[in-house]
Length: 504
Image (cartoon, rainbow, N blue to C red; front, top):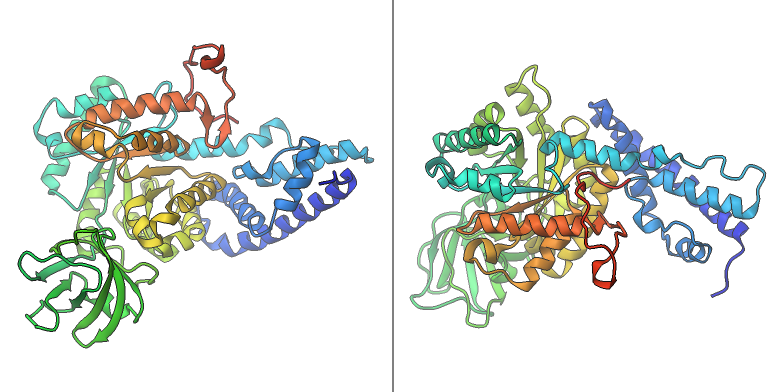
């Protein structure tokens, strides 16, 4: 490849900037009604510019920039226009134009995106712990309300935020957990915010009919019914659905997944009493059809309210006692707006409550930019990558790609991300980690928060995760190498004590 003349590269870079500025302005104009929290407008503008930038094929410009040693456009998420201006300023200097670098961003302007992300992260999770930027969110078990040593142990191990699953236990149990967290936080002089996770709609099998000692295998058919199933020799495998209305939204040929994909297939026929699923994949020895197992319809945009009656009842307690509310099965900006309204009614005169949106479906992923603007435009906001349901919805082979795109998008929006689902799962539940889990935990450092589920060895899991995060943060912040000395090849073995804020 020949090195292009710098004047041609400069012309190309200016074209890209002009296109991004115009497209970004149009996007931001559409978002204006959602930006009721004025302080978020600057971040929304950067997100709009990022979406505009990523509509373009930047590979030709990238190839032209590299021979001149100029900034890669692959890491511009938090500072889109500033990065383009820096590239243009350097090209102007190389070309010796009349006013080289006239629009070069200041150091302060270039680092503003990182500072906004830091501020927004602190507004959701509170200040970071000493020596670590990424927070550790831990799901509490019932022991939190019964064992006086349970919560102090989690604090000592490194817990920064406590999660309560509203789909389980009662208000009395929740109150006991919160009291313990508040008491221990005060005793230890360490902040720990309480996140309460609304259960959301659970699409599950309910009543099941299946042959004795017979598992489902590829080629079998399952009748999913609106009402409790009745024995039928044509359909030895049957189950009714906990939310029957979704079966009326599913088309012939639609994908169906039961129990996180262990039973996977497609809708073969639509009937008055339900839908017939033909099974295409199971484990080699088959899979039992069981009650209370999740049902997913990947690729089908279901019209289901994310706020159930149980959620509405729980929301009264959540609004009064929690620091953060987590929103399950949210898929549209309108879903966010409804929760914002419900919270405002329950908290008149109070500051806006931090909201976490769980990205669990293909539709939520597709609508994520608008959901971010609606939420962060009115409340402190974070995104949770709910990798379990999301993997079933989009396909396991796409999960790594999609979680990367969510991280990029949220960095451009200056909103924090929670890396969730089965982090160090074997260690937390069995006391014995796998090698792959450590790699996953290390990758999680690029998020602002990592969630651990409850388990017998959760304290050990927190301590291990704390260690991994501290080590990785000495090397990288988001996707940027910190370039600290490498001890393995003669560099210093000293890890700086202060790793508490993102690099600018």
